[in-house]
Length: 256
Image 1 (cartoon, rainbow, N blue to C red):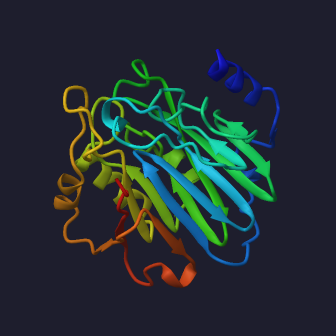
Image 2 (cartoon, one colour):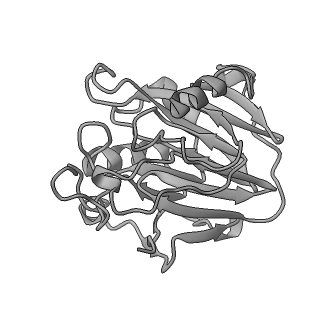
């Protein structure tokens, strides 16, 4: 019941919906400083920069996320790609953050966030419904989080997504997210400077109920794209940290 109330509260106007058209989307003014990105497991990340903490896709610990710690971290804004339990479990998020889970354009703390509707499966959304990919600029970094995208990116979606500095892309497959080959196609279409894989199998998985593959299967199909490996679940990014030519894959290390 608490989760349902939170979702309804979020839809009641906590944020002002500005527009859903590209023509009215204006990127935020670049904030000073750097962007801190912390991987909390699966597709869940905490972004901290410009005085704003943004949490994307908190999950419940079961199945492929069974061995992760619950992502019960403080945030000012929570973005949700769907109301499935592996990317939309908000009941344990502390405090009273603003919650957004529908496509559209939203203003918060002088940042515009654009939610772009995509299919959450390969059958036109008939099985898992709509996934929301989130685009925004924070601390001068243009971010695109694809959530649990499973369908190819359409021309219209590509226009809305633009050319991100950093893209967070699911790579582990299963019925509701890109498999490694599909993820490669999405990465090639978006041409981001930095690619951060999400939604792949780790030691957190419950062996009996997790149907996604490990990160190495994605790396194997990426045709030698350079890989940066952090020894931490957290990285700090500014414009000078991004590849100046071409693209690179950034892998974070969850601290089990």
